[in-house]
Length: 474
Ligand SMILES: *Cc1c(COP(=O)(O)O)cnc(C)c1O
Image 1 (cartoon, rainbow, N blue to C red):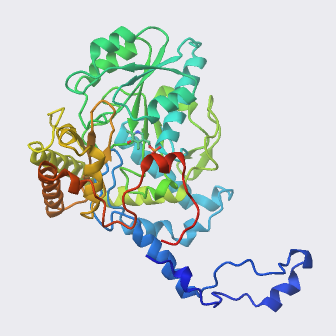
Image 2 (image 1 turned 90 degrees about the horizontal axis):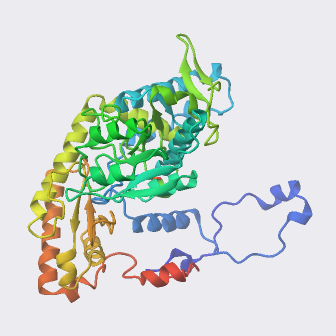
Image 3 (image 1 turned 90 degrees about the vertical axis):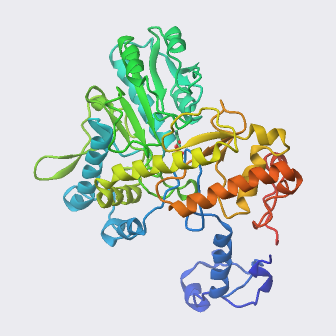
């Protein structure tokens, strides 16, 4: 593939009118020689970027079953609403009076999230899931300090947890204690009990957990923890399985974060802007970051007066454009959020049942929005999970999440979401079965993948250790 720059034609894209700007610029700032960048026309520049974007994989291009990431369809109406000039031209320092519409939107989004989580207070500030975790743990820390229980320095995290959980608690100054999963892939109650003492501040749980399995003993766990004076943190990054069916309050949790860029259809943005609102129970409301958006019956306003606030965790009010998209999605869906969760769970179970004859399924339980296969059998036949993931790329499919959660060998974590039709799911199932057969018959051929992507197989160790980031024409 050639880059268009090779076709450099010496044509300027846009001319600012050299003589004009020279009038206004100080001589010392004027460049005397050309710097030797390619000169191409506006159309050629557009072609360059279009070509680059075509190399990228996205849900508009094909199936994207990336477990734990909830790569659902992001409705285009969200974009339309977020780009309304009255939102985009609003300055965050504008007065409450001038910002009533934006404040109302944030207030109503807070309420919707309270409704879905069962919680009593919300901050929309955190910019990502991990940022929400850090915020939640800071709230828990300050809560215990305020109660005079500074001894509570330990946080329990299941061995199946997302890596951000121990990292966030650690960044907050807590010591991490791991609790084992039992043979059903759930928190082992006896192990949990043996870890408890008066120094435990909280347990961080994901439910459904990262195996896609619902923690059946969650009420018992909540009871045990509260009796110990400890709190329960709910990692709600993957809320897609339970919307409207149950909520973290009913399960006995005290603090929750949600990922708007997963469950609530805002773009993941290539690591760009996201939102990880944190919702808390009544007793913890006084510790939320300020301001919180409130309504006095006539006016919406920013309340900076929060008794024991942990302070701000983000500039202004978080990523406002993301909040607009999430609110648009929630309004558009209404009661259908419940159906979205039902379809997400149905789709995951459908694929799981169809594939379990061909791949190992270490936890053969009904799953929620996702499930985890093991590529152990295929590994013995000569192709590891990584090879299966690469082979899928040649069928216009984004690979599932691999090698996570850590407690499953050769893990393949599949999350189809509710967005896909049955024929797309069937196509994926057929491809996975075909790959299993290919590995039995001719593993060497499978190992040649990916062959249809712009960049073929890379040496991952070399790429990580000695990245070569210099521009090259391909
Ligand atoms: C995605 C995810 C996170 C982290 O969210 P980010 O927005 O990527 O920081 C935390 N926990 C779980 C279970 C997740 O799936």
